[in-house]
Length: 402
Image (tube, rainbow, N blue to C red; front, side, top):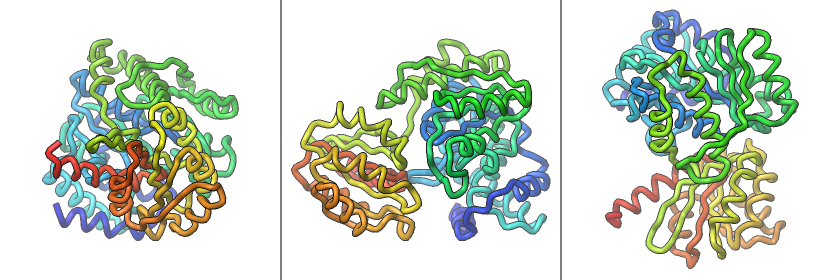
């Protein structure tokens, strides 16, 4: 598998190059593996991961061999491709990457990193005999590499201001990009409430005479955070609407699927001795607003924040919302050089009157947090930091035999 990972890693320098031409050319060369099973596509700014995970869990519990493609990974790249509820096997990953490389050579195209990961998903799900796939959009929707399929359901979770350099500077423009996953023949479901966003999504669905469902119900969730009730409600309604296409879905399999949903690094709780640590990849103002009630209700004071964020995010709005909720902040750099520098974050903390220190390495930040007197710790600001924290805390559990 090492060769496969080295090849994929070599593509990271290719950056972000919007457009679907490369995807279509390579998939033609591969004889369209993405067409061998029906797919559900999920876009949105926040909640798309947990919503996708819940849908995939329900489909698996309904007896369908399910492929689930998501991003980013937190600890192991194989997390991005799940088949039958488990991470992709190394041998299947190796074979899928070899087929991708052969196709890229045949058409003389160097895919971007995300395009390559997406094609690997299509190939692997085909080779594994998947009966249905759930695909989480990487960024936007219209030009995202996943958007080469014709889905049976297009699901859109709450939309906020994010990736504005690529998607546009207004909610309407961002919503229009997300609406690009709506295609003829798909059921359209969304949990958005903003009238401007709903207007954009309804208009796109109407172009294709698609059924449009505004989901307002909530559903009990095994995932922490009150906001997850809305995400779970969207997933459950999606499953119910798909029963005519996928008749093995029942009320019982829906409940089992919800109960078995796992979504790492999203308000994930760890207990180390007497210390409670919560890890969440809240990386934009919309996500922070969603977790604030949980922090206020579930983290006893005094509380400590371990924080790192990418410099291309809306850094100051996130900092201004989060930092004042904590008695001390440890800032770190989870993914240099893209991370916001710790000296900038320290200056922001001083401006807000919040006590703060810096540890550039995430593992050092976590060690410092655990060595402190704080028994309520929250780790947030970036999914890269969430991944580093999950890996560190998993290792701590193993060392302690927990």
